Length: 510
Ligand code: NAD
Image 1 (spheres, rainbow, N blue to C red):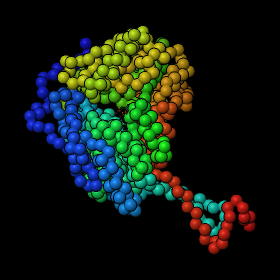
Image 2 (cartoon, helix red, strand yellow):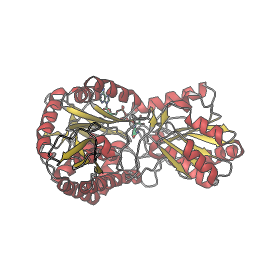
Image 3 (cartoon, helix red, strand yellow):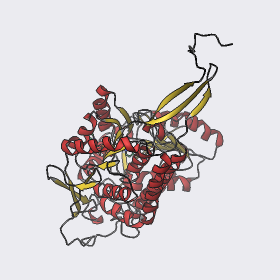
Image 4 (spheres, protein in one colour):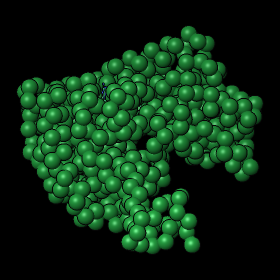
């Protein structure tokens, strides 16, 4: 049996009625026009209601987009270094409130406190990083092919941006979109995931406190269909920046296509860690456990496949099994807990379904595979390892998004790379080896947006581009300088000071 934190009753001591929160539109907090609300609950203890949030619809989205459209006219002209001052202030506030924000994040989303602090730290890093761009946002100057003519390129904002985000990094992912969008001079309508509206509300509160003018950032909570589709269909939304599943991402892409809305998509993964025979075994075991079971396997970059060379396979599996069994499950605010709950019951059922599929397809279940009610009344599932997995089995091909990883044996590096690449996704890959030649060959040939050497598939930093190849994305990268390409368009500017008509490509230049 997997080690558990024994559940000792109500974890939050909630005695009062849940607080009701609001949408943020045009600088004011307001309920949904319909008056309807939905609950956000603690996934470690579903009897703990975190809050009630507006179940918004098209009417609310229309108001938010109108406010953002109006605010854009002023915000785009407000100098970028001045926009940056607001973001610097916000980053400072996130930093000062890191601990309280992290505790709320654990309560609403379930990840253990140390990881929740990491989520907030990523916000701090990203908002500071974006603020720094306020004094860069560089374009280029270049010589003209004609005399007395000046040529340059400048970045221009797009207008109203729709940001649609998932629940697994409920504060970090919004920051990866909203901070760059704002520094570039866009205004935003933000639709957070329905499982984590409290954390989203805290994000917006801090941005408001930092001094954003009314209408520059608007938040509308509610369902994917009711709020999300209204954003996708709105003619005044110029760009949709989406992170979530491939299924919804495809829908976003299709809905935006008829009006040529700009779309940036960050979607699913089926990430692999390769372990070669010469690897440092202890290091690889630590990395796999963290990559596979950190955030309960609910990271887009989670290591859900372990591709191991045959000479080290038996030893690695034995060590991983032993360590996976010793992980402590429980409420993420309790000390000593390694693994929190899944986000909701549907996720729990999905993980159970894939465990069944793995067994039916002939993989060997070596540990886990069951719910863990001893850990608490929430959506707990044991860290689960499958061995003898074939590369084409469904548990090796499809995103499970839970604490399940599949061990696949290979003969050599070339086979490992082929197996790693033999999926529809291309987010993150890792290799453990001491052989520098093999490491560089893997870096060259692994088809993914991120590759780690002697480190797990998770752990991106905000000043490097983040995103995936193949079905994981549509060619964009978030974070780093690359994020500016999502939130701006290039304008080429020619200034002719010759006082005569000069025809490019036609008039001879003497
Ligand atoms: P999801 O696709 O179910 O939802 C994402 C967002 O889309 C939510 O806000 C949801 O309400 C909204 N949505 C749902 N239906 C919609 C519609 N019809 N129109 C517009 N919006 C709609 O994903 P999730 O369960 O929240 O998150 C998990 C997924 O996100 C996983 O597939 C994971 O790999 C992916 N993810 C990817 C990255 C990345 O950077 N590549 C990062 C984190 C998570």
